[in-house]
Image 1: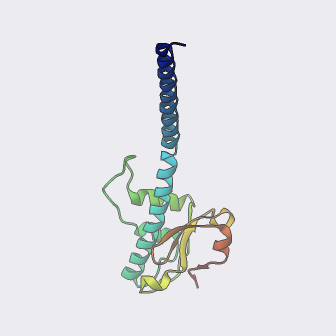
Image 2 (image 1 turned 90 degrees about the horizontal axis):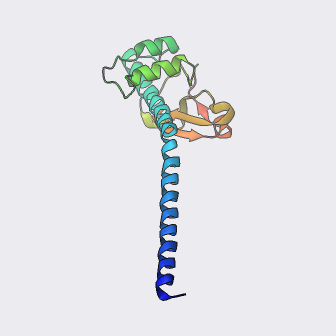
Amino acid sequence: MTSQNALRLAFVQRGFLATNLIATVIVAASIGCGDDSAAKEILTRKACLAEIESSYRSYQQQNGEPPKDQQVFVDSLSLETETNEEGNTAQDELRSRLMEGDFIVMYGGKLSDQKTDDANTILAFEAGVPGSGGYVVYGDGNVQHIHAKVFAESTTLSTE
């Protein structure tokens, strides 16, 4: 093989490797982009749970008692004017998910005056948490993903 042919062969092999590398990067990037809607859904669920804690605490402070049930709580949610990409407000999203049963809230349970006192008490959780785990919000506003077994061993806000 002449040196010129060897050089051509090396160039073709490098070009082939570069093409494979570029194709791999493109495939990996497109797979990552497919997870974008799932990531948005997780962020929305977490934001809803954080809003539940904030709105629940505000209701309790303003009314001197916690909301007694879902309808009272949903009716108390403020009407926002800022909309997201889909044209909904954060409160609209929360209302909708509460009414669809996506979240379980420990209505009637009284939060402490100090948020830190409620750091280990679950205020609300995704409906599937008891069976398969998912996101919960503690009385201090902390949102975390927990397993069903951990949930079973956790303290929820007392509704008595």
